[in-house]
Length: 108
Image (spheres, rainbow, N blue to C red):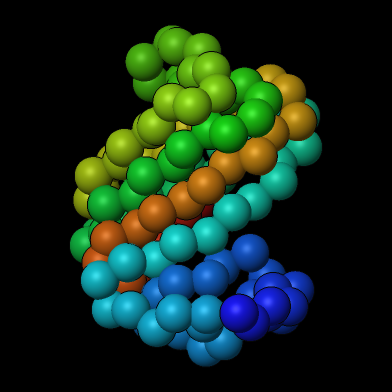
């Protein structure tokens, strides 16, 4: 058994980046705590599919006018914008596939 201190990974554990707990070109895996009233940044990816799994809290998705509750997944295909407004303090798990650096775009 090995215990690994994960603070150096800044919430991202698997992917094609360093440091990584597990190096992978196929997947990126991480988590984030997001405070209540965090507004969308409207980012999108050109190549990745992004899966946001809500573990705790609540998200309002603007484009579909829907409240997302815990243990639900928001799947964004390439070129679909992230329009998630956090109505409660939330904990999310993010999975991106494939792992491609610099594939995050924000409309200005």
